[in-house]
Length: 355
Image 1 (cartoon, one colour):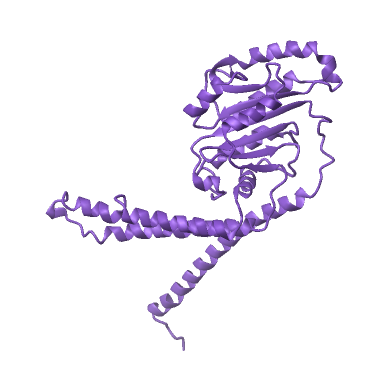
Image 2 (tube, rainbow, N blue to C red):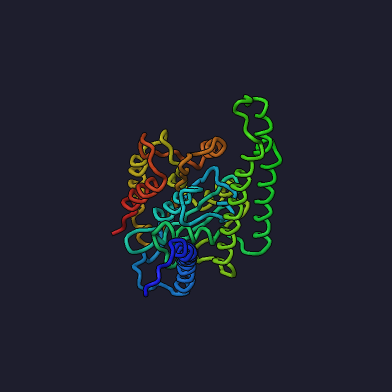
């Protein structure tokens, strides 16, 4: 005879199985994402040891280019390398990644005559990317973000502990100061009519749980980043400069400039049209074409641009007041920082074309 099981027994078997399958699926997604990050990093380590002699690089860097991107209002987490490479919009890591791609990448190779400086303000941290030293650089934004994260991340238990303590302090400060949920509800009790009175102990629990979940997620991300970059050396061509102010960087760039009016350019909508400036440079180039062909004249051009927020008031005043900086313009229309870099590269390629 067939035995019939009640419906509740079937549900009792299905619910634990569904819960176990959900946990298993989440663990697979987490491990797959973590493995993808580690795979990219390990591939970069293995490829960094190989010298690419097959690339068609120019024989000599007669026309050195320096591109400086002034990144305003960078958060402390981004400056410490604490960000999610799967969410590049948070902290605007996508802007930094696109600047690297536009500054260094051409079709099938990297520009060896270009150095990029990402100055993270107000932390006085600069990431220098040397086109002549990078190896196996890919143009996708996620890999660029991993390279930036590895450069910014300072491995060690001290940093991990500091970041965890910082998260605890932020949580405790929010719960103790006037911006915390307890105080907000206490202050609003007198303003709430008796007919719509809400228990002050009900809502702070949800806010406290939300802050606790945020701290747990942040600690988990820090732990994942620490494991991914633990014991790894810096990538070739990526250099981190501490205590690097705009004035000190400007002094170094002035010493490297050619000193013939083609030194340091500051992109601004109110500057001189770039094509008119380059026409003057083209006339000077035709006069010294013999020196360039023999390698006796090496020119260095520096381009300074802002990020999506533009220049800060102090940086703009410093650049305009410097006698070695010239304001140039690509037009009255404001375009993306990465587009400014690409267009300037195009004009310089035409100017310094050697037959």
